[in-house]
Amino acid sequence: MPSYRTVVNIFRIYHDLDDMNIKIMRNTLYKAYLEDFYRFCQKLGGATAEIMSDLLAFEADRRAVNITITCCLCFPSFNLCFLGWFVLLWKNALLINPSLISYRMERVRCLTRKEIYEEEVKKNCLAFEQQFHYVVFFAYMRLREQEIRNLMWISECVAQHQKSRVHDSVVFIF
Image (tube, rainbow, N blue to C red; front, side, top):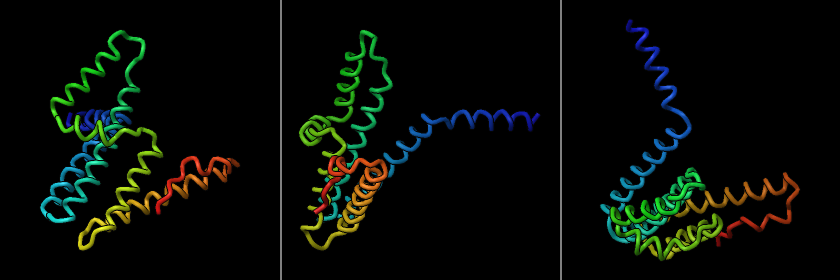
C-alpha cells in the first residue's frame, strides 16, 4: 500500500499546484522577500534606509493595488453585495494596517500602468541625488528593467506595424 499512498500524494500535489495556487505562493514569497529586504535596509540605516524604505513602500503599494484589482476581477458582478463586500474588505484592510489610509490614498492616485511606471522611474532617479548609499545599485537595476520594458514595447509595436502607438507606453527614464 505505500506505493498507492505515494501515487495519491503525487496526484494531490499535482492538483494543488494549479495556476491560482502558484500565484498565491509566488505572491506570498514576494511578500516575505519585500519584508525581509525592508528589515535589512533598516538595519543598514542612514540614507540607504531612508531612500529604500520609500522605494520598497511604493513597490509594496503597487503590488497591493495589482493584487486587489486582480481579486476584484474574480468577483461576480451580478450579485447584490458585490460593492458592499469590497468596501467591507477594504475597511478591514484599513483596520489591520492603518498606514493604508495616509500613504496609499495620497501617493497611489494614478492607476494606469504607464503612470505607475513613470512614478517608479521618478523615485529611482531621485536615488541618484544623494551620495554614499547602496540604493543607487537597486535604482540602476530598476531603471534598466524599465529600459527593457520600453524596448519590448517598441519591438512589439514595430512587429505589429503599429508604429504610431510607440509613444503610448514608453516611459522616458531621464
